[in-house]
Amino acid sequence: MKQIKTDVIIIGAGLAGIYTALNIDSQKRVDIIVKESLIVTNSNLAQGGIAGELDFIQENIDAHIDDTLKAGSFLNNKEAVKVLVTEASENINKLMNFKVDFDRDEYGEILLTKEGGHSTRRILHIGGDSTGKDIMKALKKECFTRENIHIHENMMALELLHRDNSCFGVSCLNNGTETIEFIAQNTILATGGIGNIYGSTTNSAIATSDGIGMAYRANIKLEGLEFIQFHPTAFHNEFSKSRFKFLISEAIRGEGAYLLNSEGERFMKKYSPLLELAPRDTVSQAIYREMYDTWTDHVYLDTRHLGEKYLKNRFPTIYNHLKTENIVMGKDLIPVSPVQHFNIGGIKVDLNGQTSMNSLYANGECASNGVHGANRLASNSLLECIVFGNRIANDINNKKSHKIDFEGHIEQYHSYKYNYKPIKKKLGTTMDEYVGIVRTKEGLLFAKKIVLKMKKNLNKYPNNSKAYYEALNMVQTALIIIDSALNRKESIGCHYRIN
Ligand code: SIN
Image (cartoon, rainbow, N blue to C red):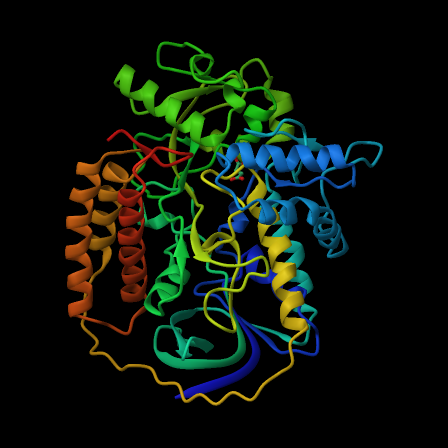
């Protein structure tokens, strides 16, 4: 079996992986593995922007900390929030050094927008609404100039290699056929989200919770998996059968758009004095209530008072997408509904991204450092990737290399010719129905029964394929989400229980 020895192996090439790689000492070899192509990541889809106070005015820093804590229902790790906010400026400036070009006005001043839960304008953006895509473009370009960074596409991570609670790398499937082991001094999980566990999500198709699945099988500590964030405004196309739902950025509400129910009523006044700019959990729960009360499966985003010309210029990606759906922003109402968007909990890490296993780090959506509490403040996630990615890189840079004494092995399973699509589909409908915005004990127990059966079947017929491991990661994570949701009996943040 092929083995590659390296200083750092990073699993995932979204912002959490790539930014960390760029901050690792150029003397160290870094390998990044990505299960499809470099362009398929959740980071690429981020529209609204990246939150951050660029000056060092204490009042502004305190306000960002305060907004993050309030949005998270104060369940956040306060130390982590302080780190996130105070190290924003240093890391956003680093992005600019990597030629990330934020939108500016005619005087060269950076333009800032607002989203739900923010008391002020502090969100930087690019191309109006293509922030993630443009950040990733600049960083990938930078990566290609670095001789120490090696990128491997179509490389599916299977299992962490570990012994005595120390990690030695990861086993992988290259191009669906060849098994490879990366033996590494340091391993970083940056595998992104879990969206495809649900039947409707804003996440890309690669978001199948691979990092959390691998961590679970290696007995690594996880936390907060009951906190699944539903974005209030995904585009609602009643004819679409796709799991992927197009995001209509919260920044549009930040620029003044309203939400209307099917009766044409601006309903948010019934739920929060912050109206459409209440934190995301409040808005999603309010929409759910309105849909329930009016027997519909969507509400509307009203942008008509903002004007087509302004919207076309400010939100070109969304404007052009809606055009393909025969909707003109600024003229037509936009049908929207809440769908799964972000996983708040995950692999438990400390302030340097260190997991409960030695030499194993986690960053980004698969990790949980406590910054988001019970509900993430909008646009804090790209910030989290860079602040904690920088900390992980510093921690690794300060470590001495050690001799690795590890003989890995990959279990050779039978190759059963199974189709995992039906499991994935059933998992999606089960999670949407019983583990969504509103949860009940009966619903959670019913979902658990269905998902346990799936897990049993998967365990019975193990398979060395990408599709098998994706299904396994999704089903194992779904069970952890259900158990966590059953254990947390009170409603808080985006975990809402009615019994
Ligand atoms: C959005 O643009 O609405 C999404 C931003 C985020 O999830 O933070």
